Amino acid sequence: MSYKITVIPGDGIGKEITDAAVEVLKTVDGKFGLGLAYEYHDAGGTAYDKFGTPLPQSTIDACKASDAVLFGAVGGDKWDDVDPALRPEKAILGLRKNLDLYANLRPVKVADALVDYSPLKPELVRGVDLVIVRELVGGIYFGEKCESEQHDGTERAWDLENYSVPEVERIAKLAFATAKLRRGKVTSVDKANVLATSRLWRRTVAKVAEEHQEVELNNLYVDNCAMQLAIRPTQFDVIVTGNLFGDILSDEAAVVGGSIGMMPSASIGTCTSLYEPIHGSAPDIAGKGIANPMGTILSAAMLLRYSLHEEEAAKAIEKAVDKTLADGYRTPDLWKEGFSKANTEEITRLICQRI
Ligand code: NAI
Ligand code: MG
Image 1 (cartoon, rainbow, N blue to C red):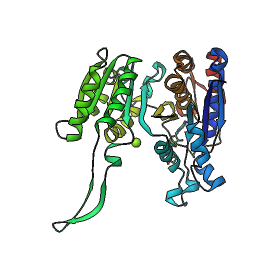
Image 2: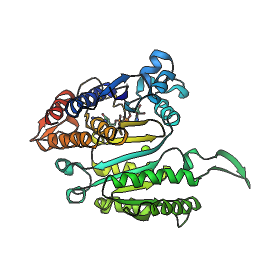
Image 3: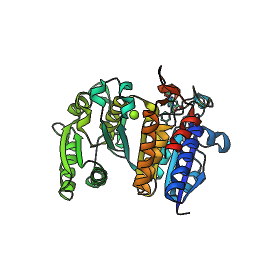
Image 4: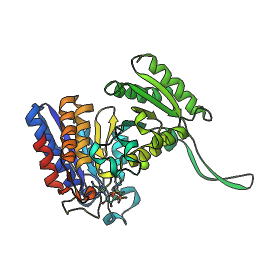
């Protein structure tokens, strides 16, 4: 075996969707001879029930010792009353910190068969194929903060935005490397007309760009970028931005795609990277076998691309998903009159057949 993958199903639909993705990975492994080995670990509410903590040290150690992590989802109302410090969602935050997952990659690619699921007009979303590269461990979310203070007789609170050159450099380098694997265009998003941190961001990205002459760099202010995503989303290839702007823009971009069950993500770390669908544990449909596994399956494709550098195998998965949709199969969340309904297991089998 040449690659070790830690699988963390988590809670709710987590088991169903990671089972589906592993099935697909086994199929591409059979075809391309990748040599994948899987090790299962607990996190989230399931881990809390077993070990009294949402993120056991054994899970962290296993992640660090593996080539990549495939993550389902955590959380659910069952754990609403547990101590906030031990809530299931702490598992994903803890993994971000422990694995130093400094970049979040969220591709938005709209399959031709799904252009009419977007709230935007089909002609605007046809051909959308972009990825947001969001800085994940710095910026205002991690800056110094004050919950409340008195100032001239009024109460105020504040959060400090700050970025260092090395923090911007490493995310910019990743964005340019990502663009090289794609269409060779980076759009850096900031608010350099107002914010000092954004001016440092822009200077630093420009320096990194000098080492990547073959990639085209544009700068956009975040307010304009928010508009452009709705007006002409096909103009983007790679969007790189800070933590706060990235949080907002990545949710906006996901909506452009139209369906939460389809969206994959990668969180890139300094030792091991983690791959998960953008949706949560969907407790309302858990255990029914009807969850859409395609967001997780496409996350597994990203795992092959970014952690294992198995581009051909990654593409094989993406093509099989597209083909399954083009052939008219839909999970219940996407089902409409005139299409064939397929549950989690059935859609997974259809995708595997097409690989
Ligand atoms: P959610 O994403 O779990 O569900 C929102 C809606 O979308 C639900 O109606 C659900 O049935 C549907 N949905 C989501 N994924 C689907 C799929 N693959 N197939 C078909 N339908 C799907 O968000 P919600 O309900 O706000 O959160 C539920 C739990 O998940 C909470 O405990 C939340 O904290 C947690 N959560 C965990 C995340 C993670 O593990 N990274 C991310 C987001 C939320
Ligand atoms: Mg968000």
